[in-house]
Length: 374
Image 1 (spheres, helix red, strand yellow):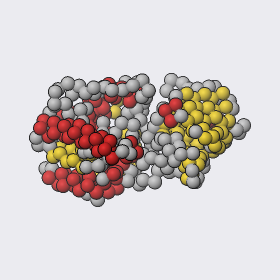
Image 2 (cartoon, helix red, strand yellow):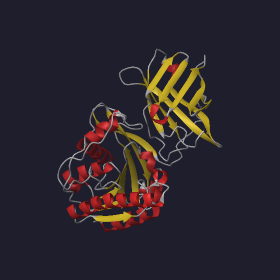
Image 3 (cartoon, helix red, strand yellow):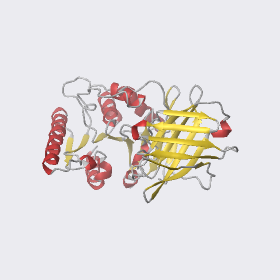
Image 4 (cartoon, helix red, strand yellow):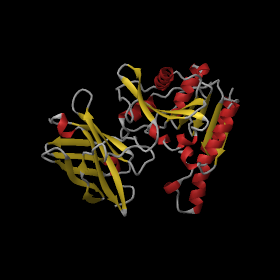
């Protein structure tokens, strides 16, 4: 089996069927082989909103994000049979719940078929997120609570916002490099991870309001907000409407059309029906931002590291890199022209997760920027 087994940090599964809560709800752990490597897998099952069930399955050794999620396409539970499929990664599971409700024995198939058994852990055997953060849940709207991580630290408050599909746990390692100079927090937006998953509330300004509600709850005075990827829209939402609420904004590969629009029109919504519903809602809920009157640092990867998508032919690779650099460069130039006070930095051949691929560069630029913020 390929090392990309599961291909996920986690995914959300809707459960149905008649079964007592004590039979199947709770956490389940198992391991599956990917070549010579054994991967730890956690299934978390709980009652769903309005009946039924929901669960997450996390391949915690494959992602830096302990809480990331992807939806399963189908899930059935007809005691004792437990089955689910993920069409996007061509994976499926077929298992059976034991008579005493303590194990699920089954087979994971993704190209190959191999055993994957789940067992309820004890407090002593349960796998834990190793990052030394505190976790709390903050109410930001009716029946909506967001997961907020607190890594501690001293100095100016700094709040980390995530890209689409990630949770605040994606910063588990990076945040620890910041606590020497800042008190660092992270927010998992609605619709993902352990945060609430309401049916609505995914426009850019509503998501920005969620961030403001967390700042109010934590009583944070003019923090620096740091956002990756689509979190740029939340940065721009807060910075354009309430500039006095923040000391500065840091866009980590986040300064694209959803964060700044030179034309003043809303960014395009290139989603497909194959995307999760929440992802579609966030993309469709983009709003145009043309003025963000606060101190800004914007870091772009130009060109991006093409990674496994890079063509093997050197000429094709060079052409693709040139096209990417031109596109990113055009947006970086538009951002700089539209917001002249912003510091715009381009890091060649950086990954989209620039805070992971170019950690030292990002830390240096962030520290320099924050030291200049009043």
